[in-house]
Length: 473
Ligand SMILES: Nc1nc2c(ncn2[C@@H]2O[C@H](COP(=O)(O)OP(=O)(O)OP(=O)(O)O)[C@@H](O)[C@H]2O)c(=O)[nH]1
Ligand SMILES: [Mg+2]
Image (cartoon, rainbow, N blue to C red; front, side, top):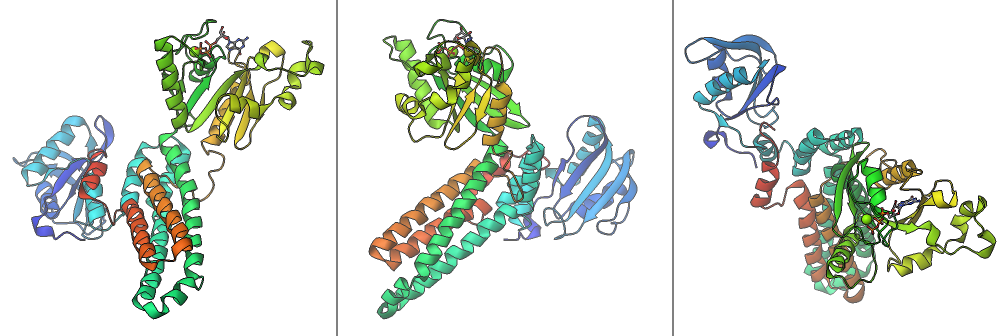
């Protein structure tokens, strides 16, 4: 895919952020890069990758700045083209003067992401790696940095490439069988196909889990707070966000609209949504609020179901208000009937039993799958730290071991589509053993996976991805 250099523009842009700094770098890439370097410095081209100290001159031969110059010869550069870098001083005007001179000499200003785009087009990086550069720069936590680095180094792409080659291998096997119809049945029923299919499915499954985690690390997760009126949803939102975001009163039905807050937990963004209390209502405004609440519940990455713990019926032995009552709670609660009541059976839910201060119960976290329980007081703040711990755990922070990479929604969608196709193909194959159908499905799955690394990605999508990068990247 390498671009021939004669009809390619030479591009230039500051590589360091706007503003003042000790050093300001301008990067130039393309066929004119080396002549521009010589004209700006009045020096001959330095050896590749060797820093040389020089003055930078404008069109009147006045010195504008001085600093280091670097030359990277094609294809041994970031973009794969000839690249030069001017490391001058980091002031907005001085950078501007130098940039103007470079543009006069035939370069044009780079579009956002254009350096990375050229690196991709010249096969220096695949698409997932190019995206990882942007993600590395945007990382809000150390975990995200390390994961983006792994993606940049090709960890994620390696898994994808491996799966693609397995799909191709299986497809070739199946197509060979189709080409020899008299032996087709034997070919297809010898167990190789089903064995390889199930291998591919289990690899895809593992990759889906890692990619989901990778997306969470980058985009955070959406946490929806739901429950009956007055359960303490808005109080909990306020505790988590550390400010009075939502109105709290003792009037049931206070919150009607969705209230959204964004917080950072150890660098992981959490999008928290407080919702209208769930109940039957004749009020059209409240009804609409409840409809919106249900829509958010369906979309949530993590659902916090808030239950007023004092509304739970306790066995008679545990009644009486003495101190032990609250601490008997976890054993006496009927979790499945609570989930049934809200129509949440079968879902992953964290039940937050609120208002423990009224029962003198200690805060408690029971972290398990698919149902976790947290006992806390949203009003007093007791147990909020346990909830934070649980949220981090759900975001995957503790499980991030070796090999975790960063991923984007787009990657996850492609993986999910490939997974759905291969699952369906396996089912059909078991029923009908039709080689042609299977080969076609494998081809589709392969296309979806190739979108991730960019071997099979539409130009308009590429344009969209790179234009979201910033200038100079
Ligand atoms: N004692 C006690 N009271 C609480 C606690 N959390 C909330 N409350 C009280 O319960 C009432 C309702 O709290 P909200 O946070 O407005 O409840 P909500 O679930 O948002 O209610 P709606 O918006 O009406 O659905 C208020 O009077 C709060 O002060 C708690 O942990 N302990
Ligand atoms: Mg509320």
